[in-house]
Image (cartoon, rainbow, N blue to C red; front, side, top):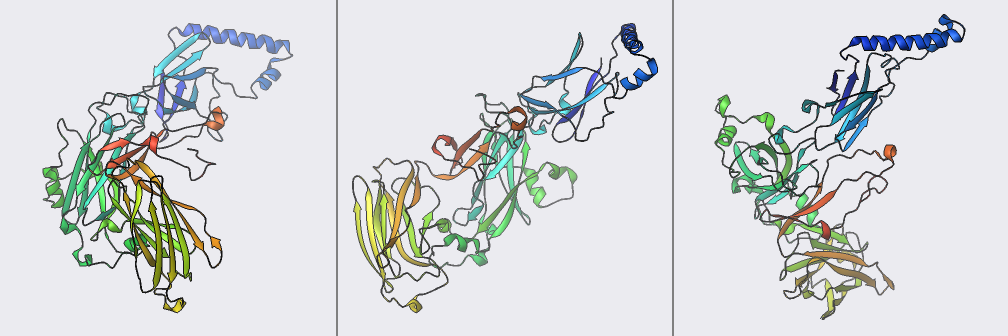
Length: 505
């Protein structure tokens, strides 16, 4: 009984066909003669061969073989929409499409027909294995190399970009790392200039961080002019600076030693010599994404938090260490006519308020009461406009900075993780107050460049409607440090879904 499969598309759909052809065809001849004799006896007993045969053949016959797939974690037999009813209308052969969704080895197709059974391993060329990892010591079905740019904004005082690469689809139920994973080379191109960085995939997750640095000539010096003092809506100003967009690409290569960034082919790629053998194979290059080069300082990178319709905060995004100063800007929202308010602040005991500065003493009078106590830090700040005339306010359509506050993370506090600071605004004139708003300062012993969520698989096949079992995909969160090292911080992070009706975390 020869058994084979043919490829059926990007979802690894395959067709298996069964045709009885064992040695000893006289056995089959006898079997079919016996079957025909039994049918004839039944037909004659019911009053006529011709009439009964017409009733018998009103529905197509099919080969009553049973199929199953073994050695696969998740596999399904499929039924095509509007499938032709005569497709399997034969006792000689039968065709069934199937899908291998997840497997750690070559699946085996099993077929039984009465007392007979046969099995065949699905050929590797019919499975979606990655050519990038064909030399590893593990079955690479559905493996994909994923990339994530840590920070797409590159500033002149920190002219480097980091990209995390990892292997998705390999499964995380094993603790041993795959041996001999390849190197990844990342490159950026600008006109005839090229800069590169490399790393080797390693560890149980098969990840690494490639880093490349942009020389000063990559930044547009015409835009490198002194900037005015940072307003509270800093991020909007950063977006309007008009940086230079640069595309990043990567390719994978094999190396027995270290993954060096030195490659003589790169020079010929930036300056084509016309010799085919000296050019890089463009077909092997994949796009990572784009970054924006700014000729400014990355101190502008902050986020905006609204306390209510009148006041907003400008907070740093990056994590801080013990002993660092954190500057918070308190500003009046654009269009607000508030001229008097009281700001109440509470923080953990290791988060101290060092200084409060009035941005424009000629416009605002400020009284402050700060207590950096042992159990908590508290502050009450009363602000009142000196000239209550709304026309005296500058930039009435944009936000207007009132205060700058310096917080310090005490060296002896031992604080680690997210530290909360609560804010509440009171309006004595209206006898009203805002909701309690919480901001967070992330304290770390290391200098983190960013965090990246890693999904074990790049796609989810919702089979719950078929099996009744919920489908889950493991997710890890890793933190990338400034030096390129990676640590698992899954236990210290919180994740939530944008739509709980579709995905739950």
